[in-house]
Length: 142
Length: 130
Image (tube, rainbow over all chains, first blue to last red; front, side):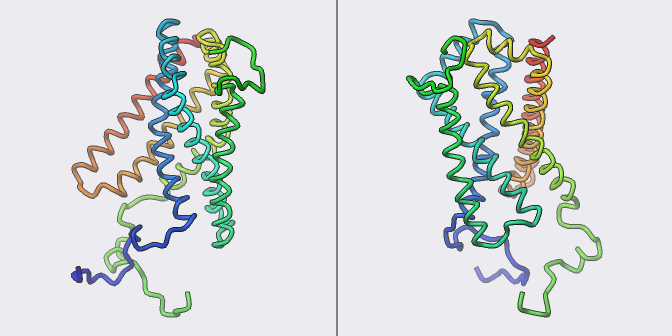
């Protein structure tokens, strides 16, 4: 344990930090980044399956439209929303703005809450919740 | 900081070489953010258009991708997203995997996966749009 003699600061270990919203925000940004990495497989699969004709497309839609499929799609939507909104926050902070602790905590909370609201709005707006179709898109229902 | 004799975090050798431990990084930092700025516009467009398109089933999807402007924007959205996530995942791998062999394997795999997904996406879009 005491063999560490380097006087320079060590990389922080999560276990020694008091839990804070900005820390959760940072971890979530990375987690949702990895989530989006996995999610894009679904997007590319959708593009590819569209080239293979109606029958395969309908089978694919049946999977994504099932309850587990919808849960995964909602998770992916939430992951995109959070990473996008918190990404804006990161770009603002990279520009040297909004860096004081109080503002940091506020924007971290804001990004998290806004992401949840946005994901729910997108899901309802797109008519993906059965029985709820506020925008009345034209075309066949899935 | 209150202390006026600030101790440098760099080693003597590091100072002489004039490079950080990774020998690069500024370019990575900038490209990650430039691609993020592009995605700020591309992702909302793609998400909204995609959700509207899939309402029309198979025909709706084909019509959406076949439109030349949409085809270019989908290609850009997926391409930039894959680029952004390749360099993002690179950092995640470099942060958590200390073993050189495993790290190299995963870094190469990361590149192959992203390039492979791009090839599949590009083929699909061009197949439908042309």
